Image (cartoon, rainbow, N blue to C red; front, top):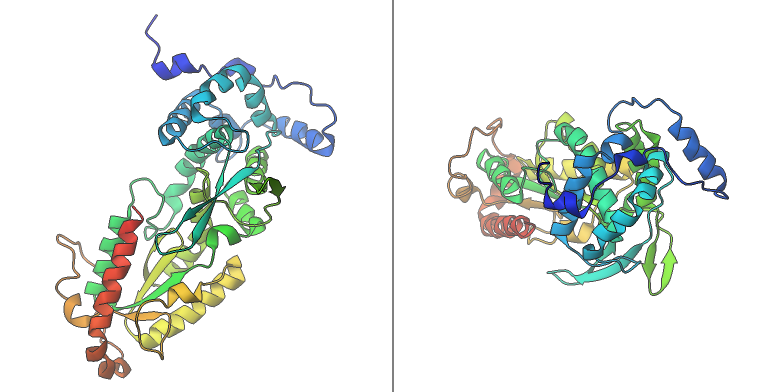
Length: 373
């Protein structure tokens, strides 16, 4: 017999457990609904729970969780204890996933300091939930990533902040030297669950996956010894959160593409490049309205206006024109799409006194992107 890999020795995911869920009495309507899901035809369009619990996908998920390490969740289980737990309980867990009855545990609230001050709230799932989320992520990402915008660079395979910087440099070099900086206010805490689940449902037909994803969104949060509800947001800290955030903001990406804008988005930071301040003002106002109406998201006014700019035009930053044709073009950059149109004449009188401010603003923004690596 061929030598089995180390990971297989640690954990053999038993394929024979399919359909052998224990009798779950007293669970009411949800148990009835879950059992009804099992009776649906096995062949479904798009991602399926069967693909999520497939052996190779689970082995990869286990390796990722172990490599990423991380702190325990509310149950105190460490990453080192996960394999033993799965050896003892995997048939039951697998059956719960297949019959749609798996319930994630609440996340543990942790606050970490931000580089610029303040704190960022994270929601740390249990190690078991991180393992399940990772298995779900791998399947969903394989189906979804190819449909996302080419101008989205954050939390995607084969894409990076360096590529976002190169795109920004190319836009500026082509003459798009006014940037509309959109920073969403507490984005990960404010995601509307119904809107997000509507977007997931357009791509996933398997109701077991839909129930599981909503369960991860609404599992609650443990803070100061009490478990509170999570009625909105997708807590940072779990493997699935970045993919769900990209799915939400893909709506914005495709709207910007439909309008013909040049932009670069990294997670919840989005920069749109235009030729004049007047155009920048119009774009900011219209995008702000779109975000609030379509996605129920708000622009963070303070962060969107934090670079030094003229008081008449908050939230729009003018980058130095003299440097744009030389130092801002990346070495070996490919052709950049752009019309080459002249800047708005109304801006001409302000260019010289704002060049230095613009160069500083650009350097700050590129450095901020690189810090996200």
